[in-house]
Length: 182
Image (cartoon, rainbow, N blue to C red; front, top):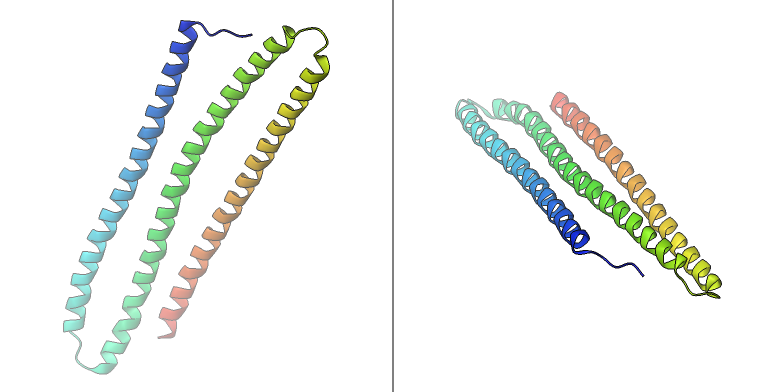
């Protein structure tokens, strides 16, 4: 059986604290990016509202008003797509940061668990080889299943990322086409 020394316990707690601080810092960085994005969007919206109000006040007839609407729609659509793309990038980046920390911690825990299991199996009583082998097979199967899930999640994330980029491009093109028609 593996006994943990006080130094090992302190080292494990220190490592866990460092991981927590790192994750917290990454979370704050993501929130900070989100606040900056929203402040920039609010400033832009305020400036655009002022400019658009001035433009509307200069309209002389209904035909000018209809023409102006088409010119106002395009920049708004582009800004919405750009905002959503930046929002998605912040969320994706933050998620990837957390995911990489979780994967590193999982690998570290898995290695420690494997070392502990190897130590236990070396000291197992005679006649327990079959039980130890069965347990080792079960652990290996569980590890393989977790790795398969991680790969599937990565593939799904990559597919979503690709779809978001494609939809953004289509939305930008649709906005440009709509503006040209009017």
